[in-house]
Amino acid sequence: MRIAVLDDDINLLDLVSSILNSAGHSVHGFSSGKDMIHHLRRESYDMLILDWQVPDLSGTEVMHWVREKLPANLPILFMTSRSGEDDIVAGLAAGADDYMIKPIRRGELVARVQALLRRAYPHQHVPEHLEFGNYVFETRSARLSHKGNPIELTQKEFDLALLLFRNLGRPLSRAYILEAVWSRDIEVPSRTMDTHISRVRSKLQLRPENGFRLAPVYSYGYRLEQIVA
Image 1: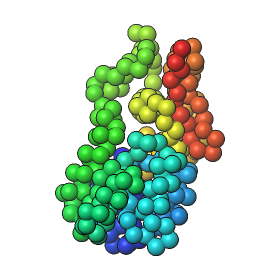
Image 2: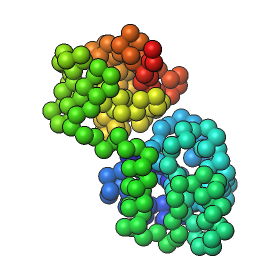
Image 3: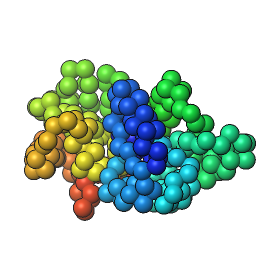
């Protein structure tokens, strides 16, 4: 999962990033609240971890912006050095889903992050058989059919189609798609993703008459929408 972390303590930011990267996540660190919001306007993340005390823009202010501007199910974990009940209640009341008291403990951090992600994205733990309308995904064999008819796809096209369907209605940034399908360690030309998007749209016939529409989101990325008759 793609996780954004805000903390002005660079050593702690590196520690949290190292722990969660080792757990299989893709972590993006920010030491400035303003910088984080700048990226949140342009990128998709599956979860946010916010330090409560950041000089330029506090975790509280970032959280208020997130809850006003971004999807309500985006999980937020806040970190604080304060253990008082009033501080914790204030953080949860401001919109956080969970909290951790510093110093950060590796096992607890991974457990809390995994619990929040499972709750927010239960469909991300992919079963072998998934159905979306008349589209049927066989995840183990990477096969896809529509109304019982197989659709020939490359592995990357299958991965992209599955990503889009698992995030129905959710705008996905270009960077998010590239990381999810091609991994963050590979430099992929932008046109490569656009070509695959075009092929998936064509091969799956993602048109309103088939119940789904794959639409570009201007200056951001793409969104697969379900059309309700």
